Image 1 (spheres, helix red, strand yellow):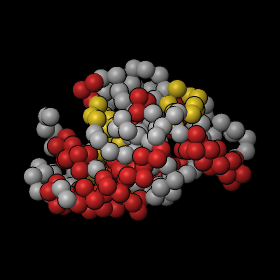
Image 2 (cartoon, helix red, strand yellow):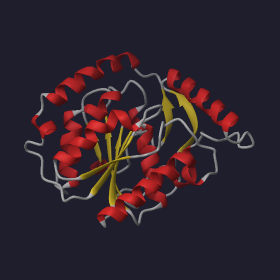
Image 3 (cartoon, one colour):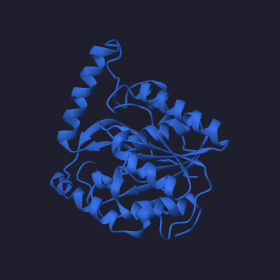
Image 4 (cartoon, one colour):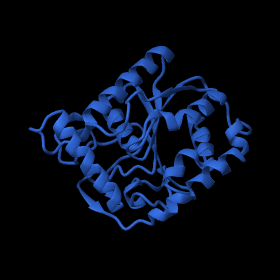
Length: 250
């Protein structure tokens, strides 16, 4: 269990991040395939519980498909989030994620584990805060759950998404897709996290400020080497997930 004792910062600010490092994400992808853990070697066997993967900003479930297959290789029931493209009203996205969580819980009879990459981790924490009765663990991979502090280019993309949401859904809610929105999904981020939360981050993150991706409890934070994008294809991340899902220490 972890506690988000520091408040979620509602405002969005630009962060000077080395975005050029993200060009090296392919090296993370290649290194994963050279690691025994990718093939399930040396990884503790799972107990058949559900693990749901949640994509980051502008992404879909497609790029997390191989993480889902890997989870199945090591003995878990891997699920895709079912949220569609992660570029919509956060309340709608979290509602879709909760539907998937409830389905996984019904099919396995156990609480589900969530793995969220980048903004997907923020959605996962929101869903867990709303439905702690069906969520066991949340892994966040480079997720700015303490407030959006991103490279200016990413903030500009966020503005475009916010404008599209206003046109497509409800222009009477100008705070939609910001920390100031009063919807259930955003409000949940201001509450205490009552499920086990493991925060994974990299100090060479070229997209978000890693200081906003960690908890106040050091024991729940885990640093790895690599890129922000590559956290979804990082051998150390896979190894950590396998160990923590099996409730191992270290």
